[in-house]
Length: 200
Image (cartoon, rainbow, N blue to C red; front, side, top):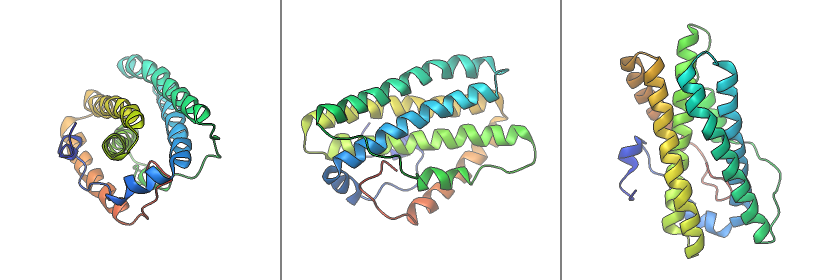
């Protein structure tokens, strides 16, 4: 995945180039935030399985993702320990909270289900882009490779959530709603402070 591949992810706004430089100076904070991002990703997949057990393909596809995301949490925690750093407290994720506010309120349950899948896909897409920036912009060759592996994984998760949305929902509605969410995500990012101690 190259620096031009935001088009593949669909993202309408690249991350501020200052972010990766700030992140490189705040490695302990970035690793802490990354660890909690992986933990929350596992929890989100579990919540989808619990809420929609009747969707067999969703359950079968997300069950291994739970294991993978928790494995990622352990990988990041191991990196923190290896560097004699400390897993700090979990911080509020303003980016994810803002995206969650976009979820359809009321109305048809299938629309809320579709939004949930697409918002999770959008979070994975932005995470993939941020991991790419770290894999290209950090000075430490080991950490560049460390984040390249996460980038590849997140790209697969992004695709899976979109595929599941198209599997269970009307494809035209999914495509139209995805375009809306991409534009709204762009606005969210434009109005957020650039912080080097957060993945998002």
